[in-house]
Length: 65
Image (cartoon, rainbow, N blue to C red; front, top):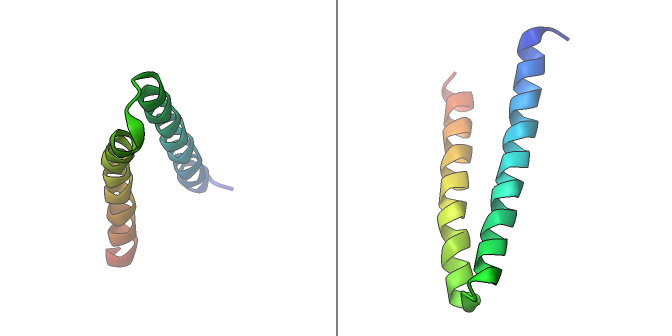
């Protein structure tokens, strides 16, 4: 395994871990603030759009390159 493969694997693993940690933070924030179902949905929707943007960018870069 060369350095490029290692960096690619670690990027995916660590970004996934970061996304899961952010989801936990949003869940904890919604729970502590008594956001309710709608507020929790809005909080996760905002996070989901960021994650979706990252996935679309990654997909487009792989398809184009």
